[in-house]
Image 1 (cartoon, rainbow, N blue to C red):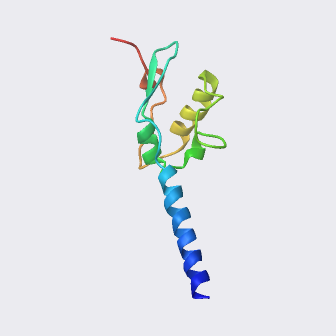
Image 2: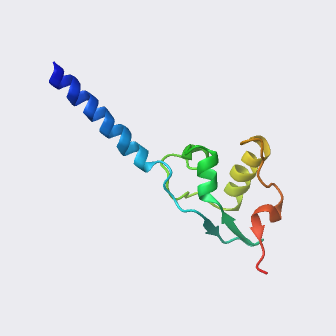
Length: 103
């Protein structure tokens, strides 16, 4: 019985540590081309603020967002910035808050 319990504890520990390795992975900044100016999306900052809740932006599994585009960005990004407060700060909601023209 003691061996079964030890094996179970070991198995659960391995699963917990393995899943922790996947959290927080991703690029620091993602550069997205756009007609109104390039968007330098601070991915790591968003991961940190959202406490690695990837589902806020990534439907299904984390990874490339296949629906990514103007409509998706305005709906998802601006929608979140307008409606949710993260650490009492709201993100940009005007065009040039995200879109930056080259200098």
